[in-house]
Image (cartoon, rainbow, N blue to C red; front, side, top):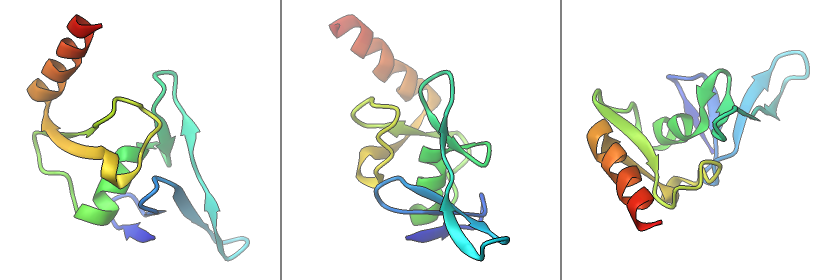
Length: 98
């Protein structure tokens, strides 16, 4: 488990996010799904938190992409950085293939 300074949350390589609960002095699970099917924690996308915790800040102009296109699969091994254009092209190719 690693801490993301950017998001002030803890992340595991399996994509599980925790936040520190002062009242109970412990880490607690902290994710919800949004209406697009992505998981969020603390108002931020889980894939971004996981990437940041293990690889550092996401460089400007890059996005975190789910390699297998499953929006809830936030395992570190399933994440990669792409430009917005490359990410859109990937989705377009997926649509063409079926």
